[in-house]
Image (cartoon, rainbow, N blue to C red; front, side):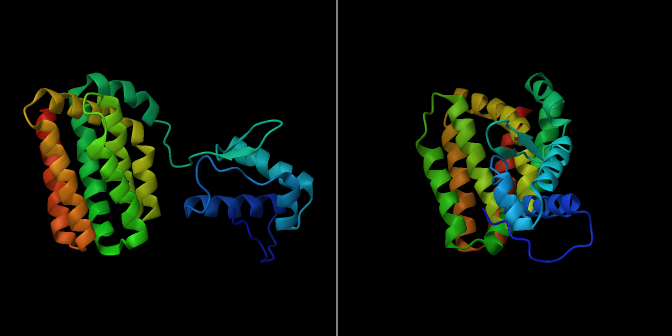
Length: 234
């Protein structure tokens, strides 16, 4: 885990520790689920006392940045997950209007992510998209939940390839909301002739446009896909 702090600060030691770790979280260097090094290692990195490290970790837990597991490691939490998302999840299951609102937000975020991915993705960024697409095309078509997970992984891989960290984290923060909306779509697709084939063809078109670096084609493919999904929900 790349934690380096060599620049001197006048700020309180615990504050600069928090600022440094928070910056690395925002930049995607530290991610949700990562473990912080031990107090001893952090003290060495920041040239600080273990008391200052404990103070910083305690303050970060109070801010919702980390979770302290006593007797085990301290875990990074997702600072981009808004508290309003959880209560909305159940509503998406039953509220048609809210499901369409989720699609509208997906238009704002995913179309832009697809454009940026086509402009910025290199071979290293394309590989996770390709792997996610292969898994999506070959997953169990009779299991809607497995399809939804594979579908979500595909779109998140595109967001990562956009090289816009905030955009990618925003999409991840909406993950459960989007998955509930996707479940509605996949369920309808399973009941329609060639519904799943059409969705898969759209995903392939999105990937091919990104791979070709054609951002205009990528935008059209992403919009076509989301408009198709929206029609399924109407």
